[in-house]
Image (tube, chains in turn purple, brown):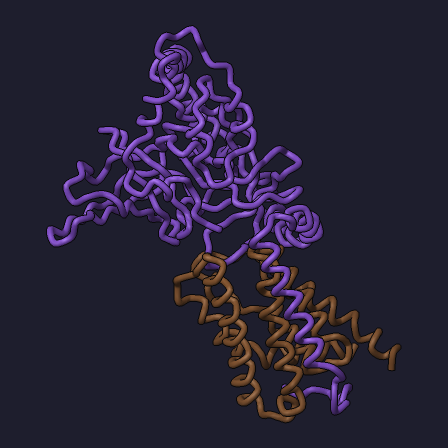
Length: 339
Length: 158
């Protein structure tokens, strides 16, 4: 069965070693240039356009199947769906009634405190493409790219909560790194008492970790974690997960805390790309923290009109620096530690 | 000779494209670790079968395609694939006369070398993959080598 036809019986391939060395050097040079300098961004973007047909060809049968299943769903199923959605909508509207007022109030309070936490400005919805990138990394491909204004470091949410952030942008597609990726960290806050810490991915879709909490920290299973907005990458106040288990070993100084992500990391098909609102108060350290600071908010925030109206703001710049305070390893707070 | 090698490039490019599509085909999560490196196997096949038709160029290009699609540092898969394809080309006369079992063992060694280069570059660029799952791919790859060769051989005869 396994027999090669001797179509090319030539004893030697001329210059095999030479070509091997040449190609290897070329590959090494590519790696160094790609890693050290950022010149290859545009080349990579072009190459990603070339790769797009392959990805589309792989994804389309699955999308066709989804479409087919949707279009043949029965009338009863649709009715049931409609009733459920209406109930959901009613509930959501009840909850939203005071939203405008509360939002305005919190905005005023924030200005008073000279707080710099990010507030969402607008969303764009992207669809997950049905392709696997790497079995051992938690990354997904989404069908929105540089053409839609997506940028590296942008926060991505789904219906349940924080999903991840953009790690690479192509012309038509972008790659999102999930909060559960082992190379990802996100600054969070316990909703019950405001305790700040960092949630780190584990490489397992259903689990995050809080590795920097002391044994004595006030966390219990069931606590909701929300984004703290520190670091500037993510908008504040969105659910990240609930604490599943707290293991306290008296011999250790740090507690072992497992978190169940709020977003459906392995099931969501529609993701929201978030643009943060330009900051009303200009504070340099808020925008300098993220690794590749989001260009849009950064540019808008730096020269942002200082609200001279509030007396607090005029004296604020120095004290403000204390506000984003003592999360244990500040450098890790910046978001993805990837690259 | 020139015409012959030109004719041979079509199945080469076709099989590489199909293998590339298989490399990104969505699988259920529990199956993902079992996905063999199809493109690598195809490149090995062509390096052994007809090295004159540009096995190393194919290897380099396929590696670049993998880099772009998987979003890793450009050149990572290209380097690993070039080195291993060169090794396969070097061994080709021996591999051709090996029994099925010995062929699988050689392919296993080549795939392991490939994974090792990838692993090393992952670590050097600060993106280590810590699961042991990645070392499963060479085993699976060696196991599907015989049917793959049979399939590609048929494609080749056309």
